[in-house]
Image (cartoon, rainbow, N blue to C red; front, side):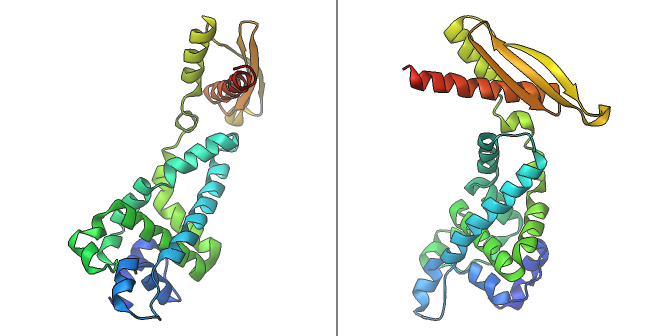
Length: 237
């Protein structure tokens, strides 16, 4: 694999490397390097380690911008739904990274270029290479280009894993009643309102939530109620 042969991958990524050797190293699987017996040849594992952190940082930042009212736990679940082996391998497949990975003989015979774990790791290595070559701005550009559809599909209901349904099931089982939601405040102009909701469970529990829609505020309140119920269970097993 020559440096020139990686030009198509650069085009697909949307990043033109100044140091093309970084991208080449990102394509060096450890099985390939181990067979070369060349002390100057490095595999992509260190890049993979850095790329994992780069993706977590960039995706976390983007999610905070997209979901300003989401709690830390919700953001963590969203990030986990985006930055995982399945999603990364899918993006790697679209970029045809498997065409460029250098593998050892054993991995080549077992079609390692099609394995999700190898593809995901290679994509993390590529993200590290982008970061080292162009900094955070370049990393943000690549993530926005290739994760936009995934992030757009994460709406607040999915992100919160439908806390309202979880809460209703728990409350019905524990207290034989259902939660009551009431909008107690609306603020902001008509095109950008913020809603505040109060949730009550008979006389046993009260929680509040906010959101840019009534449904989002109710989900936020349900999330808070679930947290309180969980704390109560831990305090009183």
